Length: 470
Image 1 (cartoon, one colour):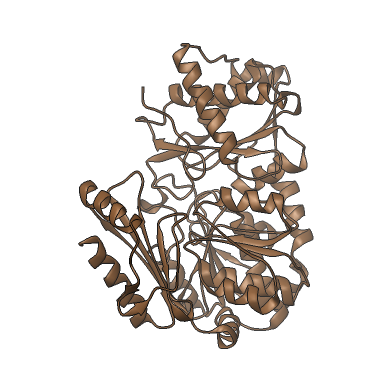
Image 2: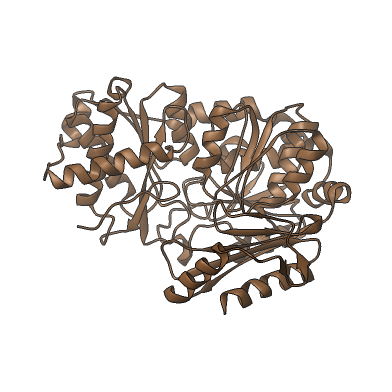
């Protein structure tokens, strides 16, 4: 029996290898046991699922287990974006939520995300308790309880519902849809065959959607909105003369974009534009949170507006905890996960796409113009990340070497500060930085750098490779 562990957001595995109905049943039963011990059972459980292979069947199996344990289930009637499920947990006062999805992972994966009552990703303390319950149940050879789906449905233990209705109503309250419509902005959305398909057409029918059909293979690539995967979106924008292209990951909690020229508009740029929009156009205030690999532009804007800045390890669960404990305007990470005040402490790619369109509509400017205007004030930044294969022994030597400290200069630049909370981040004058982050689970070394020029970025990345002996 393979050890089941929750990662940065849930438990994931290859379908039919690790992610089996047997293992899913074990995790679902442990999650139900957690609900009972924490006094959450009476509040019920929301379950949703994406468009991956067998996702609906895995969701129904989870519902059967909950029903057999006496917990009432609200099961989405069809595939649904993760943020819509999170909103349902929050708005309906449920004790917990389960989302069957592997997010942006390759098509062979599926996964199990847990959402807490506040409508965000389960905190590390919660997933740790569920993991411990999994281990205890396995050790005790406890079988998962189960009531046949049709029987639980007829008895009212499972209720099928539309999670999108309330979620779309919330989005319409948050974003001025009429203003976007009146602006006449022509845009394209690429949901990458995922659970976000149909969301923008329902909210803003004027937009164009590509890759909205059902394709569990996601067109042969991982549904991750990164530059390499958005070439068709880019070409569509350029050929059609559209002003923006928006992209969602497999469960629509992450965002990517291309500007009016078809150029990739990274999560760093999206965070920067939306943060300024919230403050200057919508009059909102609060602190901001960024992960250790996220752009220095957020630091500059926080300084400009005199607001508190927090920096966390990678993973939105860390941002979520701060959003629960502090007055946070916005939080975000390099992978495209962004959340905002007045919603739920959760990544929401659909809301972020709408906010980008609203920023354009309110300002009358394009994405590129909005970014250039900001960088003209706070400084121009360039960013690049590379993932390199590294042998385990070399990775361990590198970690020990970096832990020992003593590095005062990299590529001729003086190290002015360090942050070793998640990897090894070296900060130089002017806000440039290099992050060396060995993977804890794979023979992979991730190198991130941001600087005032692409030449400097390449220089720091090359120095990182040299330090690693690559």
